[in-house]
Length: 88
Image (cartoon, rainbow, N blue to C red; front, side, top):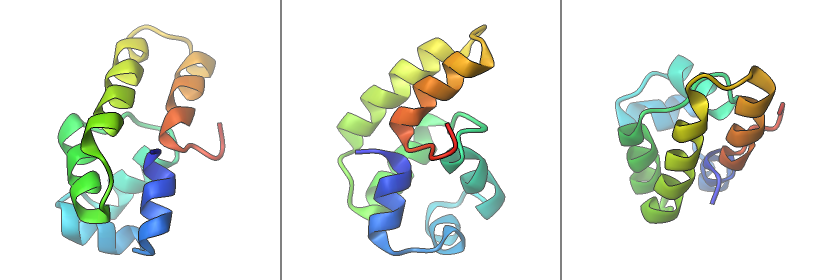
């Protein structure tokens, strides 16, 4: 399950997700927009709040994290598309 899709299915606004997870709305905008890799804890928090499967999300997070370091921006965006980046 992808982060953006999970958040959208929950029908929570970004601000509501922020309030329920302890991460700012601005951070969630970066994470969901593919501009920043979310911390593992944020992925777990989103899964908990929105009813997603943390195991599958954490596998995707691990793959994106492995590719994040030193990768070209286009490659990073392609990796983050698994997290639901619509702009990627």
